[in-house]
Image 1 (cartoon, rainbow, N blue to C red):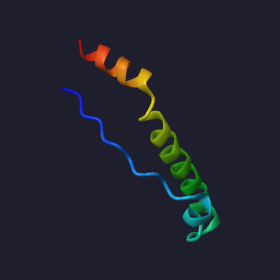
Image 2: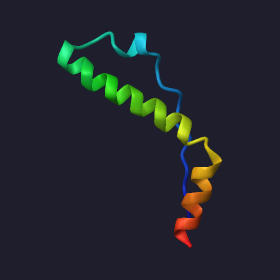
Image 3: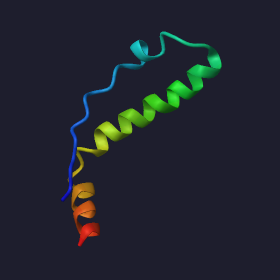
Image 4: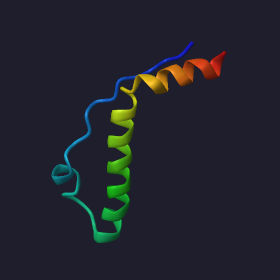
Length: 56
């Protein structure tokens, strides 16, 4: 059985980068971009089909 969770929309970059040093900002930028990637890819029907086929 596949369980898909809908992710809430990530915060904008201006809200996300408010806190932290320059080095921490690099890691936060990576995390922010991965959050947006996950947000858009979870809604992609092809990934759902591929996930279903992998279980068979």
